[in-house]
Image 1: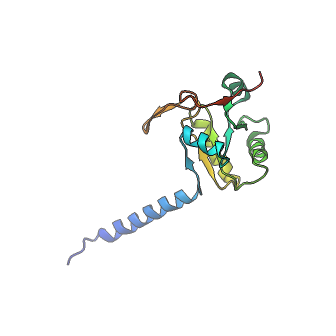
Image 2: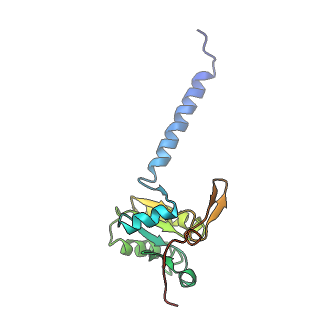
Image 3: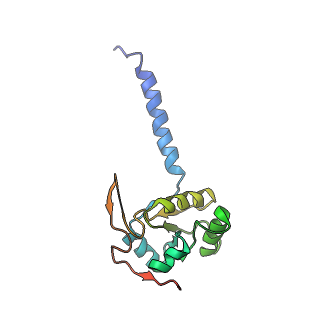
Length: 155
């Protein structure tokens, strides 16, 4: 049997690529994406703490997802202030499951990465956000358009 000269190189490249994919998945242990209804159900059962990472003015406009804690990525203390607010929301337990939510998923994705870098072990992202999003993965209506409950925020 004749093996083409480039086959071993392709196999090594494929092995490295697969190893890279496995390694990338381990960067978010227990993390990933949650749909808004799933996040709401988990929060209702006490399985997850939702962190609304939007700005305070946005909380005033729409309220926060029911049971969520406001931990803005626009914290005056910057990234460290945001992480401290997130830690306070989970009583310092970096192993408690949290889900980040913002308007359309951009800031919640950033917040998710910051929390993972800060040692949180189970960080999920409600990527559809409060208002929904449409991208190459499809359309998602968002917390508000799904009619999920919100808690008012003092004006």
